[in-house]
Length: 396
Ligand code: BYC
Image (cartoon, rainbow, N blue to C red; front, side, top):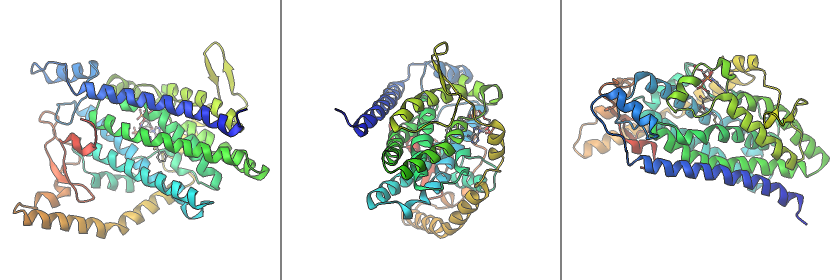
């Protein structure tokens, strides 16, 4: 007979394998798109539209409409900020993890999130913005990050619920982004999704252990799921009718599915997994609809989402204050890295003037007609060629 633990993980493993299959298929598409089958006849707009229509990737060297560039910078920057701010609720538990093994796993997970932030800032930089400017905009509240990270992680079970629900929602949202029309973002997403799927598994495993432990542990797991369920549903954004960017983003193939489509996908996935966890989802309206072939469910409170997005979430001020403090604490590291880069450039006999003038770079991106050509210094001091796909790492 299969133990409940084995059967629990096998259901989760099946979902994990299917998500990874989708990521791998997106990776194959990316490689074949690198071959480019669209002819360029000089008409830049027509060429851009043909690339997108033919499922080819738009690369930093290509002409692109200003609005496409702006929308990508907006989304990728918000995404990068979310990864970095998202380290806070879980990092809070590193020193209180219940065993050395749990601590090592959580430490690795939080470090992964920092890495995801870096891939994404690098992808944004290929659009002609600098990471330093983006970080500044986050700290000044001029750019957003995901609403979910404004909720507190109150118990160890929250670390499980964050992994299962928050990383689960992130994967459902991000796997389609592996097929985004902008090459550097799609490539970054492939690496991120591969790692993210393990994050979700570790959360599931924490909750499975707790829900099959003592009555007090099970109660703690249920309480965490109760508190994280609706904020996780809200991560997918406002309902389609009030989503300002979806339609244009879908035409440009930045987004592949609407907010409500992805939210539904997430609900359907969680119902099955909650059964295996032997935990209830806190929604009395949850019921299979044979007509729709999906679960009916109660939507999150979108007025609350709006408030949290505006900066009025339970931990909003604390999150930004902490980010500002750590940014200030890191000033000497950035200065040391910049000084080292300048010294290295000088010893190679080249001028370091361009490398130290991050503020001289345009923060609005290069002109859409000429395409990106700026070279600058990232916040970590590494030279960044805005036109280089390599800045976003990975695949051709
Ligand atoms: N929170 O027109 P809409 C992670 C904003 S990190 C805050 O539907 P769009 C992880 C939206 O930006 C998870 N703001 O927008 C890390 C827009 O405002 P602006 C982050 C939200 O772009 C660590 C306005 O509302 N994932 O995975 O079409 C540990 C109207 O919305 C939210 C990503 O960033 C929200 N929940 O769709 C664990 C994925 N929802 O810009 C896990 C990439 C909406 O006009 N991003 N807004 O001022 C996306 O897929 C899309 O940007 C969204 C929103 C689905 C989030």
